[in-house]
Length: 271
Image (cartoon, rainbow, N blue to C red; front, side, top):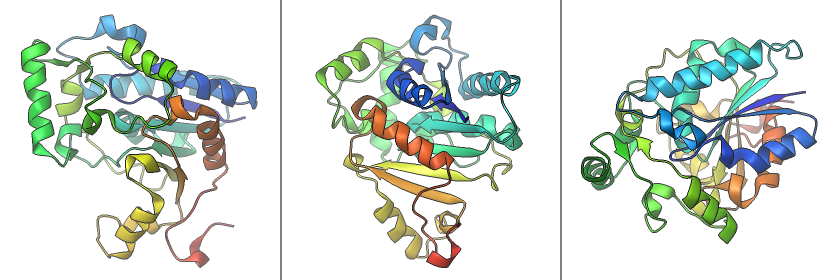
């Protein structure tokens, strides 16, 4: 049995993993969706002091709970993060990577030490818009959920049913701005931990595009050719837990089994 700890992206909570968790449990595994402070049914706990460290602590507490179970053995926990969730997930993993078997990033960038979520956004106009929205509509510290027309924030909604869009609109919660402006601090302790990236190709990214970046010789991407890293593509938008939860669950199981395309020379691929 593998335990999957599922960390949601911005504006959402553990509710968004419901169908994925159901699939994983039906296959005999354990699924633990995480609802971060201020999100989902914990939105009433949000405040000006809710920052990235708050969310890192949320994930760490779930990992502590999972590790305390008698049925769990060392190395059986896979930490899965979608989009923004990569920041609190990696921050928590950095504290004690030995209790994890693998990290899985679902349509998420790889956080870098000393960089915040907003720092990582390539478009300064988006950063400015978010700061202005918090000042004008969120008492200076929270970001109301954007409209679905703002795909530069939501990402591609391709594949989501009307019912899924309705759920996203109804349950989305304001994102505390300090969670996006506080830089993540990483010691490098997770450097040896196996990881898997799942790209949602209708949201522009793909394994092929990453392969080209690695082949270009750009030193920022060189480490991704290491055989510890595996990759999958999903032909859907940025929210596969809503658009194709069964397919996403299957890829999580394959990731846990160390499957996935490698970007290095074929003779480096694991057996």
